[in-house]
Image 1 (cartoon, one colour):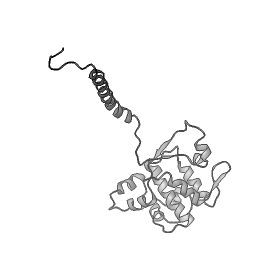
Image 2 (cartoon, helix red, strand yellow):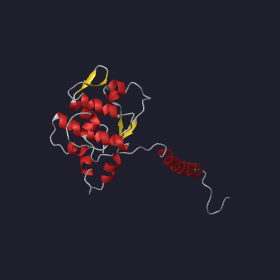
Image 3 (tube, helix red, strand yellow):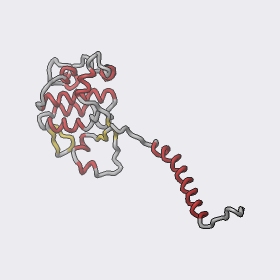
Image 4 (spheres, helix red, strand yellow):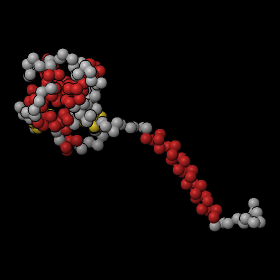
Length: 192
């Protein structure tokens, strides 16, 4: 419709159509993006973790693009040391993981005679065996509470790591790790 005082400007019509098309596109994307974003939204704090055999070789990690990447939400020895205190707000996790009164040697068959997991978590120093003991105790509790998938670390893996602490732990054929290397691996399962 042509109003005498307002003639139709044929040059502005294509621009208006483009702007209208952009608004429809943006509106459509605005609805679709949240739906796409919620398909898989892993925790920003989670770490992707791998079984010891996969972590032993960077080439192995990248050899299969279809390799399952699992999220680890494990906590550090410091977290568990504090959670063991009854007045700590995270004490419920300690109870749920079953850490109360458990001897280290009951879980790992040897080492730190008479010391509970709580005692081992409280050991000071960074000597290989003390550091490994703390990290294995934390890894055990992470495993028990389900913060590290059983396909990444099993109880037998943890026992084998303790038994191989002198440098004979073999995550895969031809590779051996000492206590410091085991601790470095365990830390990859403890991003929190």
